[in-house]
Length: 174
Image (tube, rainbow, N blue to C red; front, side):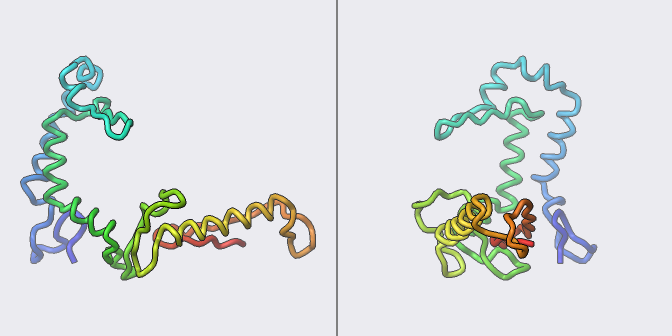
């Protein structure tokens, strides 16, 4: 199998690190090394070109060592890598977690209750996530309120929760 950035052997097809787009980003990064951010911040046209507002949030990239041509090179690289298609596949519920052979829906972790359903793995991931979060909230309330007792019958003073991470969303309590 090919490595993340390129072939893992000389017999494999070239990876993205061999692409014109990758080389353009590498060249832009090299060019930025010669520039000091303090000086770049004095360029009003650069600063304006690297800031935009969306949904009431200001996205200001001027405080990064980039210029508009660097951003253009990064966008070209993202297109070459198929980032938009991969994002759409994730939001569409496609199986993209190849290790577990399942879809992912990280966006559902941030969706407030009552959000539109996000279907993946045959289940509304928003409802699933909110159901798990409700159980966690209930458990925490019982522990904090002293209703959930330890094996000795005493109130719990310490809880260790092990988060597995990744696509697994369920608490494991020791």
